Image (cartoon, rainbow over all chains, first blue to last red; front, side):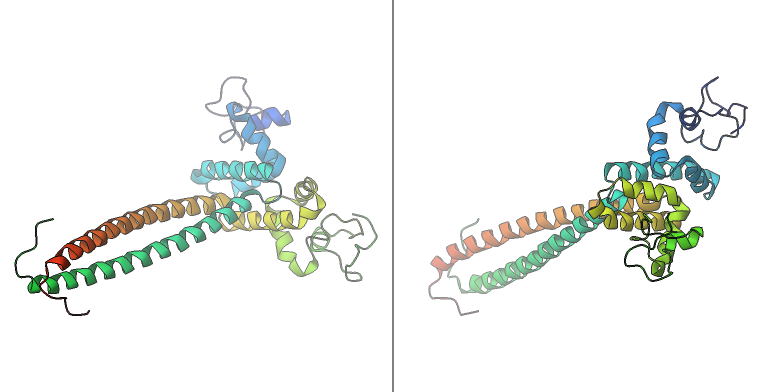
Length: 142
Length: 142
């Protein structure tokens, strides 16, 4: 991280990463665009889980226009790992997969019930039509 | 990582981590129980994303009986990040959340259809009961 200020940053305000690591924050700081001082908690999270140098490497694997999204998802993964050190993001995935399976079962049951009810309704309509012809006079309106 | 062999490991066989890092694998190697040589790809993944020292720290934050699950979920997160460097595990979570929303909408529609059909069936049954009393003779069996 060099001695020049990153473009657009507040004068003398280092990014959250450089502040945390007690380094000078320069114009070419690779973390400054994604970890401003106002969101220092985000950097603390990713630093605890991935380490700053891994975060830089993970961001640099991604084309520049996608790095903001990548930084956000790295923060998301790190927060999940700190919240749930055993399962992390994977825990949420297993939970969602289970919920999807439950919803799919419920949906299948509900659709089977719709088909059964449609059949019952059609059968009742057929009976009613047949009966209608047998009436000596029209039935009272409903 | 010390010079003694980890309990239960094959003679002269280092764990995947020590083999990758070209270190001696000792009895107290903190990664050997979770990264056997047979699954070297798992260690390569986590090493690329988190770095070995962060993996050791993440595992040590977890009580010993949960470390196998933690190691598996760390491998899962790392594989997701390598497969999708922009969104990683978070990408799968967003995808699942969207799918859950869609399923919930479909389930709501299907349940509304069930209620409507039940109402139609009950109404037809009431009409049929009324009509039945007006018949000069019983209707033919269906």
